[in-house]
Length: 183
Image (cartoon, rainbow, N blue to C red; front, top):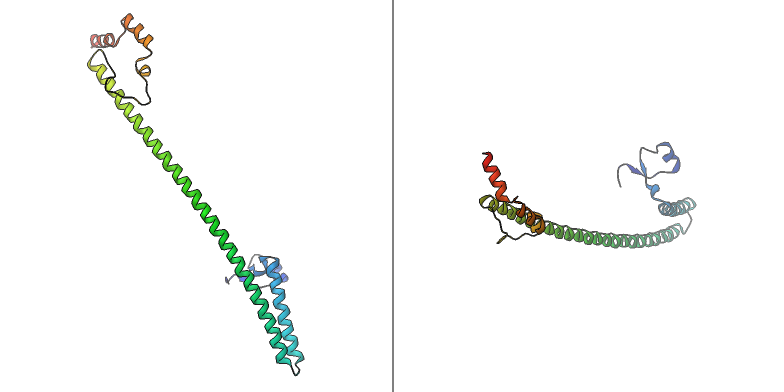
């Protein structure tokens, strides 16, 4: 028993409510057990006071009854402990299952993010290659470049827009020539 847990009666708890934790705070079950113990102690004290020829026989009978009650209480306590252990084990298994599910979900999400990052990285490398080709020549094809999330129209505009720019003479070559003429 903890050093700050004591057995007490109600008047003692009222005098020092914050000083110590009372054993009988456990609830009505503990109070009943204490009442039973007091009953046996009072019977033993009564037999001791009255005495008599069969004093020892009466004490043995009271002690046998007390031991029987204590055995019954121990059985109930053991069952309660077993039930609590079963419930705790069940809860633990449930929490482990939930944890495993969350871990699996997080791993799947991590893998999906890694794949998405790899696709974006590949698209970035493809865009860098498109820019290199445009820089080195007036015309660029997407031959040998594979994009995952970017479309050709996102890079070069719609086919109609491209055709319009080519007809107007606003192609990449014109931009390069304008840039070269400024330098």
